[in-house]
Image (cartoon, rainbow, N blue to C red; front, top):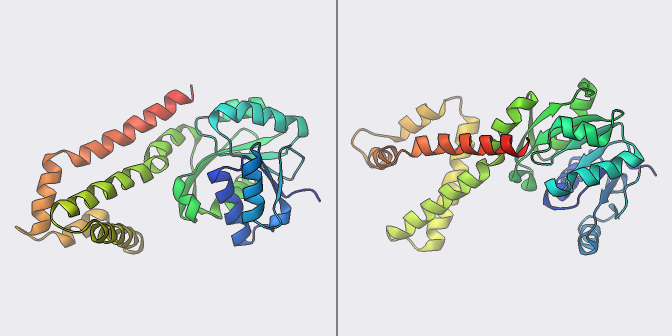
Length: 263
């Protein structure tokens, strides 16, 4: 049976997409083909996803997802070109639409995407940009695939570097904040496990509050900040250390690095 989707690369993100597509009902495991060079990973994928077709060779399918490391992208894309695909979705960091279209050939409509690691638990944030041959149906196809593991936003390609700096790298910034808060809790006397539990729930609860409230972040922050109170004292220290500016500069630096990698 011709696979509905061929996923080139069975690493963490490739497997996350496969798991999300199966769980959402987009396709059954038997309708998906994962192409993975590492024998031990092929075995692991087969064991974790019964019915999934796993191979070390590319075969034709209705669509292609390129989910390999940047260093393997050109070789893998050219191997897919020999088989021939009408449409392809790339989640390869730094690979531009121009590069992808050159590797995959004119017959393939290409969509470039920047997902992030929360896709591993079905809570990702991705942005997509279509190439010269990508029509609305192709973009909708790509959205459906990435939508199985999170939210999807359409942007022009020149904004994907900004997306990389913000949501692509963003989980690392949040994890750094979590690390710092856990250490702070320990410093003021909490057992580490207690501090960790409180920090994780605080981050989770705050994210839900931001997502589910109709108020802007500034208003929600102000609601916790009483004049002369404890939160005001803590925020004063953060502002004095230019924490806000540090986040802005971090996103800008990551976006610029993404732009450099795509040159």
